Image 1 (cartoon, rainbow, N blue to C red):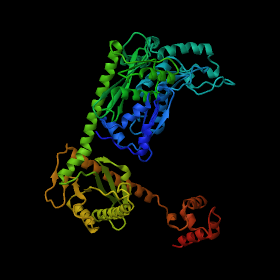
Image 2 (cartoon, rainbow, N blue to C red; image 1 turned 30 degrees about the horizontal axis):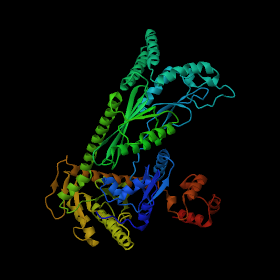
Image 3 (cartoon, helix red, strand yellow; image 1 turned 45 degrees about the vertical axis):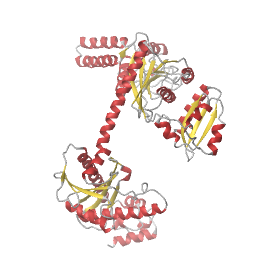
Image 4 (spheres, one colour; image 1 turned 180 degrees about the horizontal axis):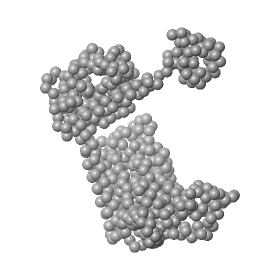
Length: 626
């Protein structure tokens, strides 16, 4: 097998790679870092990329873009691991695992260093000495927890900094029995901290005390025949018990674990994290890992683990992982301890209850991946797949990548506008939308208006395309230069005829841009030079795509027309006077109060208005004489 020639510069770097732990940064021809990796031995690891051997599809794609690389030496594998995480965060390389989903499940936070701690919501766990509880899956669960705590334990909710110099008047929460009012001196620290013991028990998973207290209050209200109040407390008990039931008890000890597993389909991978807190399974989350389906499972999980926990996620006492690369468990465990600032155990269980939990996580990952793929297949069917089938139905010999839809809107010929919406690969590209004010057509003439819009769109597009071609620039990127493959006209054969003529008048060759019309009454598709319309079943993705384009063009045109009509309704006669802008207009109306009084103003009175100049005053005088 012949040796690949990587060029003198790269060959020299490859030959001088050291036997040392460290990080390597792969770069493309533009010097952009496309991959960051770590290695116990840089010589062996980096050289493996440049051997003429089989690679996974992702690595092969990355190698094809490598033009250079840099290395950073480290003293230990742990140091290399920490450096790799920092470099990935900083450079966001294309071929690394990047957790782009910025969704952070909420925690409840208690700062026990405060004199009178309050319960707050936090999206990230910080190393600030406070106690964090969670994560909670969804806002509803958090609201139920907070409501249950505050119904039983009257914690303060204000942001006052204690100790206060002087007591203040208590707020309404004190009158409602939902705060002990330490701000007013109604409660000392000892009493408040006695209550805090119950709060900490509840948030740690001991719901019994809360249920008992709510039950006692419900019975007391029922005994006093306050049935509405008793019913409200009963509902609260039901909510708390429902929250408890949704948390599947898996152990009798108070374990704190994250279980991480992976599922792959040859193209992408799905990582699943299951949270166990206080011996209860609180829920989980999954993360799609594009292009990782063909990579080594252990390497992918190790990369995911470092990315996941470097984003500030709560690191539990125990982390169970499906598998890890050989020799990587100890440095990863050390890194987790460093990030947490406390003890962490990293395990890859092979049997027993912990292994069953890993299998459960793997099952959830597989289910999430299957659902994602099914959803992607449906989306493809309704977008690019529908566009491809539509092109075939219309007799096109190429895929209609860019479809443009046009519509006209006016009110009895006034404020006439045209809209152009763009769908690329079957999906709306809203940055490409354009609106047109009709300039040459008088009255409500949709045919001529459509002809004008298409004439202007293609006149600008062809000129811009010529300029970009001369400059060596691609068509995509200009305002109009990316010409459509297919045009949808909202209307029947007559509208289609006028639209087609606009392109022919500009010299656009027949058939270069395909075109069709959609008649709204029966949803019939009309094609040039074909007498009989195409009628599609309303359930077909092709017709649904056409309807979405037509409706979007209609909506955009109406929205633009209404905006212009609304602006015209508030148009002032002063807007037509040369030299009178918004500031002078406001000053004139403030000084004279009405147009009638302004009409009667003298030149001297006009010149006394703040910001008025003689030319502007003379322009107003000319308007007065009209």
